[in-house]
Image (cartoon, rainbow, N blue to C red; front, top):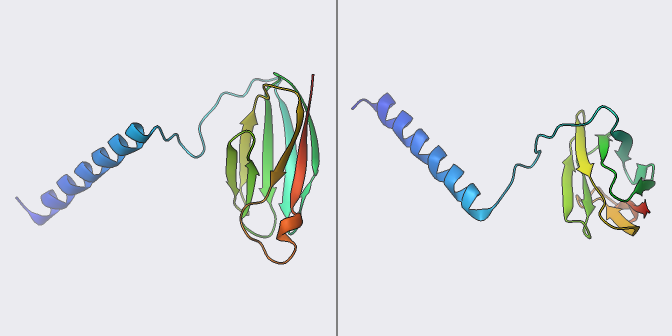
Length: 130
């Protein structure tokens, strides 16, 4: 067996093992593909040191929504601990996060990638109405 054939076989084996391990742990893709309905609401959110615009987002319970994030100056994070939702917001890219809020209430969201002095104030609210 040639060196090239060995490397190819090892790469295939490593890929198969990685795929199996990811499936066994129940890990899903970081950016899952989803079909967005034509009438689905899209809310554009800008992340920059040290705030989100808008910082309050009003949603309706049970209504799907896509949050389309643009990071202007740094790799920020978007985290809604109560929903278990998290995404990295990479500058120069639009990061889409799809939500279907199951219950009404007010939820906090925050940047969880340290972005400097003032980072702790980079928070917002998801207000889910009936």
